[in-house]
Length: 352
Ligand code: SF4
Image 1 (cartoon, rainbow, N blue to C red):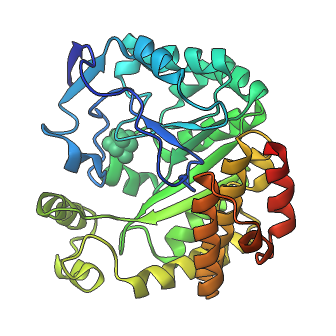
Image 2: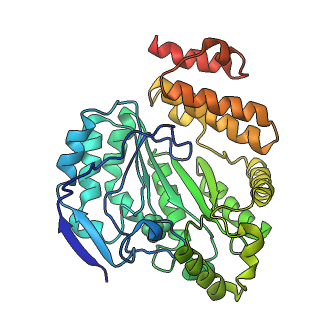
């Protein structure tokens, strides 16, 4: 049982500052962490690194969050998406008592602000009416993290999280209610959930559930304490020696680029075979975000596929163009060089 610390936010903002580039996973320009600390405490979670105390022991409950968000939203463009995702689960056990996520969604629904919620908890279904209200006005998207569909492995990797099957049922229910849904296969962990069998099982479950898209990323090991935690997971799951990760990480925080390329190709091939989108499809957000954001996302998503399929120059120019458009800089000549020029110009005409 965690210790709940109810206190005002005091200094600092409730919302992050506007991102310098749009987040292509979550479609977001801002992130918001409702609680600080996460009682679910998955050992692979990056948030351990940014938490002063053990992530799952002390949960800060910012009692003035709703007022602060209402104030800060006054300066936020209505075409920018807010991702309720950062560093803690918004439907962790604290939400049962404090309902700060619900109050936040209420404010976002009153403005019709585009919103993405990343959660492992079916408690999100209790706020379906609010999500529907947002989605009627702009876009409400719900995503869940899914690292495995094997319940035994899930117990070892994320024992306090709702089981994977329950999360998939939650997505199916949301989808049936008209809310778009996505899966974050994050993190892909070498030897633990990166095998052909493991990837096939997760992706097939996503396709059978009818999710709108998946995204993936690889385990990040930003410091020595996290490395020790990862080694403990390795020992617990499969008695793997620590040396297994040496080749793939070699003391760095990110996986070796050759490993990434190989797994990216395996993942994209499987997704294509299952007709599973590898980023949010355009029709999901078309006309629901600002024109600049929509164009930037379309380009970034194209760049992702370009890179995996070896079109490096195209990937680079699409990514650069995306960042410029997102920042409000429109270079018509550069846009005309892209195979997506016609679509991008049509989108940007909305701002003319
Ligand atoms: S539920 Fe999400 S935020 Fe919480 S510990 Fe697990 S991965 Fe981290």
